[in-house]
Image: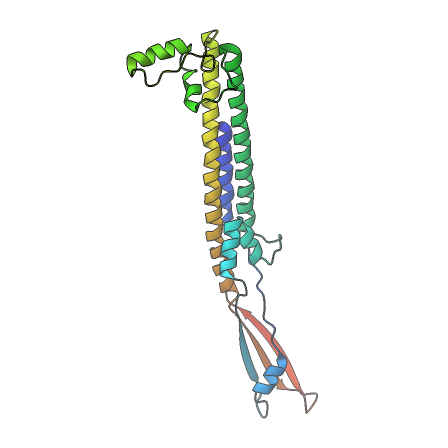
Length: 255
């Protein structure tokens, strides 16, 4: 139980940290051909000629969304030009994904260990036949009653004969002492508990995928806003050459 609580807390910390971890992302710049400027700008007699070109954010919103939906953090990495440095919030979603999957596998393995130990205990101390397939309810009942005869007698008095077990070797059990029965029942209950915890991890994995996809949209909006830039060229007649011009390039980014 303590292990499960620690896992959940670590996952929540990673996901919460992700929302405040983004750093400024670089955005792609479209190349601008200066020759176009010369052909479209009137230079005669003017002191300054200015041309502006928008630099839209070059990443795909849909790609970022589906990348993160496929693997948390991947959409954020795509928007960072596949560079791990400056990954930002995507690193935490990816870390949460690794933690959740590791926890799911660990809890599932621990569940199987407990299940195997409990049934081995039942075979040794109650004579349960493990080779014959049985419904899961059978393994619950053998932990509640000392033997098959007590169980059948209880069922006859309570609900009739519909839930009785045939008193054969395949269904037989009889505990050698009550302590062994209680120990078995505790192991079986713990196995069921860890099985539920393992399933909760799958829900956490699903939630992490959705949250990362939504976060990639937030990162996209932020990067697009930062990418709303203008580039301008200022050209003035050269003071050194009569037939030349001085070119000044400026770059402005909105925050």
